[in-house]
Structures are given as structure tokens and as C-alpha cells.
Image (cartoon, rainbow, N blue to C red):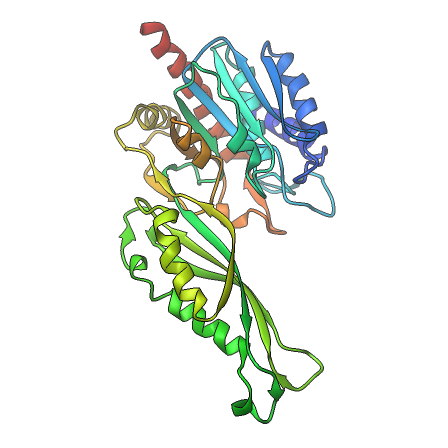
Amino acid sequence: MACEKRIKELLRSLIEIPSPTGEEGPFQNYLKGLLEGLGFECFLQEVLPSRPNLIAWRGRTPLLLCTHSDTIPAQSYELMEDGPYLKGRGVLDAKGQISALVAAVERTNAPAALAFTVDEEEGGAGGEGLWIPPWVSMAIVLEPTGLRIAVAQMGAIELEVEIAGKEAHGSCPDMGENAVDKAIELINSLKSLPFLGKAHELLGPSEVVPLWIEGGDRDLYIVPGSARLRVDIRITPPLNPEPLLDGIIGVIEGFGSAKIIDSKPPFETRPESEIVSLLRNACKEVLGEGQPLVGMPSWTDADPLHRKGLEVVLFGAGDLHLAHTSSEMVKVRDLSLLSDTLKRCIEMAASSTLRM
């Protein structure tokens, strides 16, 4: 119960410092002061103007605990309680995770390494540019996984497509070329790409997700002469975006022109890796059972950490589908269990270092 009370205190203070993407600076400075008071050396790494990553360490350990400081914007920044739940912008993604982590390092003197990135909710510049202490070899990225261990992450190719048609009076559709119809046809053509058929054991199949379509005129009764759409092509390991792009662009060129907005590879970590074993053992001690291995369907900072050569898993409290919504919430009990599990991970990683 004492841990739950402390987590609520920490979370309230963190949420009341707004840090929507682009405005992370004051939050990072506050967190720096908090960690320096716990004996951490802190480094503010300015990866974007006035938007620094925060890296903190106390002693040396191979384990890095990482999450992001930015949130999506909100109309208000306050913590609310509703029975067992805490509600408000960031309680889940990811200030609740940060509160659990700070509560963990407050309750142990073991060596620890922490990183808090900026820009995760937009371009991912914080994770891409993150300086990693040279003694670190593995990482837990804190994201809502329902206290399950995610060892695979979906990649994605996000594109914006411009489609040209031909206007005509709405009662004479055969005299025009409906650009919205072409957009729908394009989506169906993309869904027929051959690499989409095979499902990943933890992530399911690669898939095409239309995010929006714009076209037509609300006032003029005409066949749309142009349309724009954004589409997210989600890909599973072991696929890589680069070899797929030629085929994707080839399909799109039959309908219009494409602009690549983002391209991120998927990844997976071997179930027998040291980081999975460490986290599984900590979960067994705290939660009383082995947690199942799952996949993370969303992009996170785990991707650049994996590409930097670290063994990476994702772990955290709460349900991902509530993130970014007006119903963002998490159980304080789950944050407490997360904190206890992270504390054991920190202590176990330090013990393994001492035995080497």
C-alpha cells in the first residue's frame, strides 16, 4: 500500500507538468532533479532544440530501463481517481510507467541506468539519437503491455498518396473518373500484396490499415476529381521495409503518386536471451507466475534500441488500446506490481554483474 501511495504522489506531480511532444524540456529538468536527489548522475542530451533526452545512471549495470517523456496533447493535465483506476493524460503512456520506475529506484540502492526520450509520439528522434552508456547491453522499454513480456514489435511503412481523377456532374458518373473509387481500389490492391499472407506467431499477419481518405466536395454535386489518403502498411518480422518498397510503389503508381511518411522495421528478441530470462524470473517472483510472451503492435523506442545492438523487450502496466484516448486509465495496483518487478530486475541485473 505504501508503494501505491508513493506512485500516486509521483504520478500527480509528473502529470501536472505538461509535456506534449515538442514541449518536453521542463518535464525532463524536473525528472533530472528528482533523480539527482537519489544519487544518479544525469546527462541532458539535446537531440532537438530545447528538447533533451535524459540519461541517468547510478553505478554500472548492463540493464537500461527506458521510456518516453512526451505525451499527446490534452485540454487538461490532472490526475483523477476512479475506484481502482487512475485517469488522465499520461497515466498509461507513459508517465504511469515513469512513476513506477522512480518508485522502484527509490526502494533499492542497486546500480541502475535509466533513459527518458523525447519525440516518441511523433518522429522518434529521441530514440534514434539516444546516447547509451557503453556498459549497457540490454534494455526494458516501458510501454503498456498488461504486465506481459513483449519480445516482438510490428514495423510499418506509412505513405500518403495523391490520386487524380476527372470531375463530372454527380448524375453523370460515367463521364468522370471517381478519385475516391480509385482510392478504395488502391487499398484493395495493396491488401493483395503477396507478403501480407503469412502470420507471425505473436503479432498476427502483416496488414494494410487505411488511416484516412480525403476527396470530393461537400457543396458541389460532382464526381471527385482528386483524392488523398494515408495508409499504414504494418509488417512483421523477419520482413524489412526496404525490399518491399519497390513492389508497394509499383502498385501505387497505377493509381497516383506516393510520399513515404515513415518507414520502421519490425524486430524480435530471442525468447532464450538474457533479458527475457531476467524479466521472466522477476515476474515469477513478484507476480507468482511466468508471464506469457506477446507482441507489441505499435512502434516504440524499442526499435532504435534494438538497431543499436541491445537485447530489448517491452513491459509495462495497463492496456495499450486505452492510450491516446479520452479514457486513458490504469490500475494503481498494476503500477505497484510493475514497480516491484522493475526493482527486482534492477537488483538481479546488478547481482549478475557482481558475479562476473
